[in-house]
Figure 1: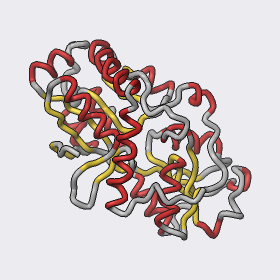
Figure 2: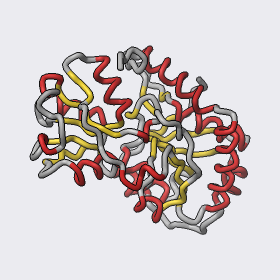
Figure 3: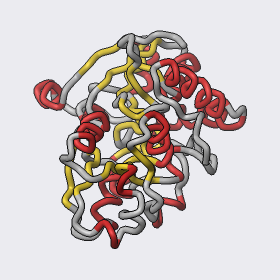
Figure 4: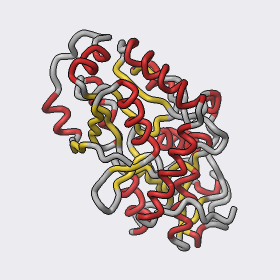
Length: 280
């Protein structure tokens, strides 16, 4: 995997750097002129984006970002930040695209330009959303009704947070910025469950026998009508998102993301994140 330049920004930094919005639908020309494509991501969502023990950022979404940059003939600059800041950076023209495992959400669709879908196979990250719980609680939490009033850690502004609020009765939401913090909350008994994709839940259960994926899964509702993941751009950047869609057509037609997913899982395994040993 090619290494990319990393720039770490916080929500506070983004707020301080916020400037004028500038003209819309100009970013594609600016990217080609500058020779750089700036992409935001939150690298706590393996295998799509994650930090390795070596401090580098890896994942299938990072490979996608690199492919888009290569197709444009420009350098890729990855800016890593908390999930809630990834699309805020677009609002303030601090990035051109955000690629961070986004699923379909109507409110996001209204606020940003959405690409066509990628990674839309039946077993993709967005196809199943669930919970990580303690293995000791497997027989206890067999339905959402049985979870009435429990503490669920979920990433701020994520699909999982929305599903948790809507479907876990009387939930005590533990809002966190990263999945790592969510898992720490579970492991230190500050939360009873963590809301994540089913694939991530399975990976954690493989790595730690004291953790398990809950048998109950979230109802995706109308989101299920829009399977896969999406690249985001600032609202109005229609030329840029149209170009991204041209590149995504090649990705989808040639099945490139399927191989990138396998490559990312193999890389994750090097750092102790196992997606392949599941007995289910």
